[in-house]
Length: 389
Image (cartoon, rainbow, N blue to C red; front, side, top):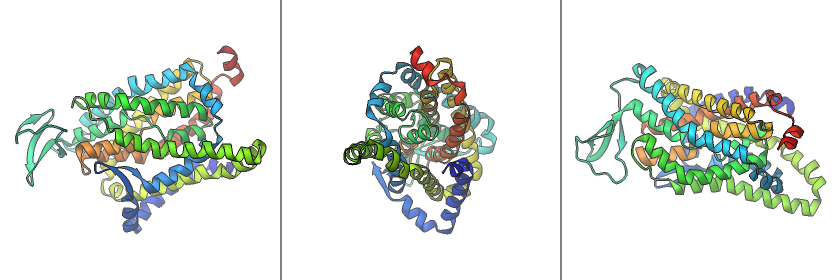
């Protein structure tokens, strides 16, 4: 398995290519799998095939967690405050600045200064045709009132929705692969989930310039329940039952050993599915994908660097620093996509931008995992942190 993980970058690339090829060779199969979703108000929130893969990615992590460690991790104040600071005081605003510069200035000539996008009218508004709202104007198409906005602003809206949605699921996998503290990551996931219910609508609405954004609480709760709570409960219960029946030594030496390849295997299968679902979008809009992917990539790297650097300055142990940096760098793209579809429409540029967030996340976060593993020595030894705390 070690040799396999050493070549993980190669397998990731091959799975991306295989996914695009599958979408090209069997588009009907890809569309059928992609359409298997749990929806909220007509917006896809949970992809059932991806949810199954994520369960098998998460379960081996959850079943390893000793919940006495979770309680201890919850009492560690510095990594908790650092995570909240990066996710809610820095990340949304750097996303706005970076995406505005690249999409609204540097790449505007490629996107098209005159190019426009048609979006749904904001919730609760019934404006007359020709009325101005923000950067858009109300038009009527096929008897339906829509808001016509510059295309680059539609892409920007999707980026903003990603920026105000810190990851609450996949980060468990990134922390696990980086050999971070699973207990600390789980505490951060729980905290971010609760914080999103309060700040997502307020901050997202402010940055989008639409006032208070309607909080997609149904989408948030559904995605957290399926992606996090389900494998968490399964892992907790099965851990207790197995240890009671077979003993802790058998659990650690035999059972966990069997689970070792499952997380990485499920991750690679997830990649194949994601890229098969979006193969037509990638091949049909290669340059558009590139223009959006560049600011999203820079944002991810910047937020990771800020989180990782501050963790080092604060003297955190590596096991806390790695997941703290990654939870800010990654995004809750399921909720971002659902919100973009509910607010702006399935065919909007905003929805496309959130999809690009999905496509770049896995390979980019895996690269950051490798970086973390190579820089463990930057942080004080575990014993030293314990003594100093």
